[in-house]
Image (cartoon, rainbow, N blue to C red; front, side):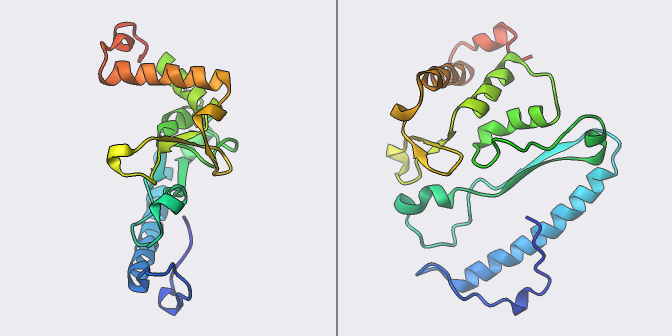
Length: 199
C-alpha cells in the first residue's frame, strides 16, 4: 500500500461494521501510515544496492478489528494486499513484474512467483510449485470453521470458493501430486531429498 495518510487526524470514520470499534480502526490506520513510510524507505534503500534483490511483502490476514462473521465473511477477511518487488539492479538484469494470475494467490505460491519474476532456474520441486500456482485455484484453510473441523478451500481468481468436485481431472491429479510431495517433505521418508529434487 502506498496511500499517504499525512493528514490522518482530518479523516472522519463514517462507516464501520456494526460492533466494530472506531478507535481500534483509527489505531490500525495510523499503523498503516507508519508501514507505508517504512516500506517506501526500505525500497529506496534496496534500490541503491548493486545486487539483485526481490522481496515479498504481505500480511497473512486482515487485522482482527472487524466484528464480521468468519462463517459469512471468512474468505474476504483473509484476502490481504501483497506485492513482490525487484530492486532496480534486478530489473536491469532480467527481473520483470508479473502481470497475470496475480489477483488471488496463496502464500505457497510466492516462491514460484518470485522465481518467475526473476527468471530463475528452478528445481523439480519448484517446477511443481509453479504448476500448482499456474493451474490450481488458490488454496487456504476454510476459515468459517473452527480448528478441529477446518478443511481446505480453493478460491479462484474472482474470489469465489471452488469445490474440489469442480476441479478438472488434471487439476485433481496435480493436487494429489502436491499433497504427496508435501507429505514426503513433512512426515514421509523424504525421497525428494534423496532424489535431489530440491536442488
